[in-house]
Image (tube, rainbow, N blue to C red; front, top):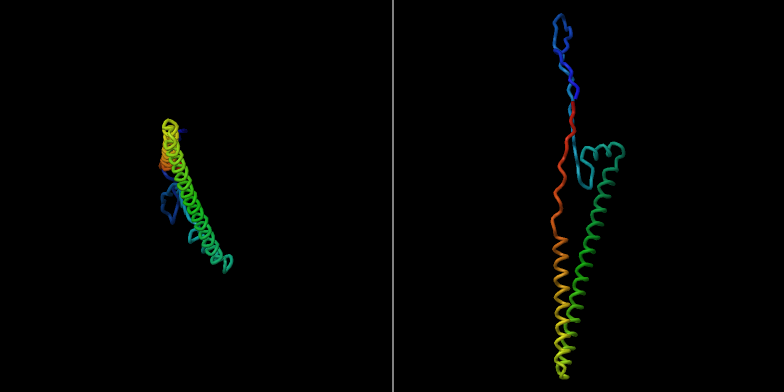
Length: 154
């Protein structure tokens, strides 16, 4: 950083009197707006460009929001139907495995019945545990945002 000497403020002559002149100052203005529409000041500026432009921009934002909501709803419905289908398939596999084990036991082959029942139960439990871990991993909170830095103005 350079070191420079700052002297007294400059003076001007005003009606025979010497008045100090304030040193120049710098100001930094930061404005941020988030949302589907521009800030009200910017939106008003669009209204000065063309009379119906503000109405068209608002209509466009409403249409986009409705489209986004419909897409999100279809994603949620798809996930629910996929989960429901998975539960039905899991029930079918579990019942089929137990019926097979019961049939083997009824035929007098208890060892095979035990093996089939064990494989059936272990596979269903492992699928449940893996699915639970995957949901827990996806549910982790996001990392905190990076700190904001303010530029230095001299």
